Amino acid sequence: MWDHASSTAAGLITVKEKTSIETRWKCLIGVGPAAPELGKSDMTVVHNKGYSFLALTQPDHVFFFVFFRLKESFTWPKRERYTDQDAERLASSVANHAVSPTMVFGELWKKRHRGTLISIEEGVLEHWHHGRIALAGDCVHKVTPNIALGGNSSMESAVVFCNHLQLMMVDQCGAKPSPATLTKAFAAYQNERKPRVKHIMEYSSLITNVQAWRTPIYRFVATWVLPLQSDRAVADQLGEIIRRAPKLDFVDIGDFVPGRLSWKHEDRRPAVQIQHWTKRDDSLNHWSTIPHGTFE
Image (spheres, rainbow, N blue to C red):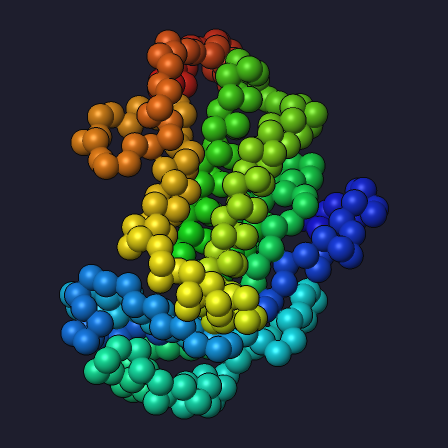
């Protein structure tokens, strides 16, 4: 999209924007067999100075992450490509660090099915669309994976994008949209999503920095403030973020069994009649009426 924008609107994509997604961390990631020492369905976080451990367990597998703060961050156009040897050296440097009272990280790494070393990027771009091109997911918003909301954010962006496309087609009565109409729909999608992904990025970055004691202040928060919070504090904060996730407005999701925490869209569910648009099929030389869905 940047190349297209540069050829049709010189100066739109600035160097500031191109360098707004920053790499501050690298991460050992891997999956291995079940680790009873870490539980069957648990999340384990171990804080350290400059790095942290995260393990997510299932009855048959354990997924693990080790986040390392880089000495110097970097941005586009630089890209760091790590080798298997790089991963081995870094894993060896923390192999003796405990991830539970009865297990060290080296045991997880040795038993892994697979593992690698990757860069972790953070940032939200300023422009998500140009012309007939619209972007969603990691190409416009990236977060650290400590609270596991990166993939969710990508799916949310796809949902909001589809909602605005559907509204546009309703307004167009099925007719082909003009470039100006597309731009308006794409801008509405971007304006709705950007504040939320920025909030998620900032919250995730905070968690990553606290867990790795990036500064004395973060270490103070990790070792003195967080222990004073209730066990539900972080869960409640994440729950409030998750419950505000968007849904496909034009799809009937039916009735779900109520949970402890309601979805935000359930707080207000206006009844909207099923609408239709009329579309001309030139190949058949007739007009047809096509239902486009139900709003809730």
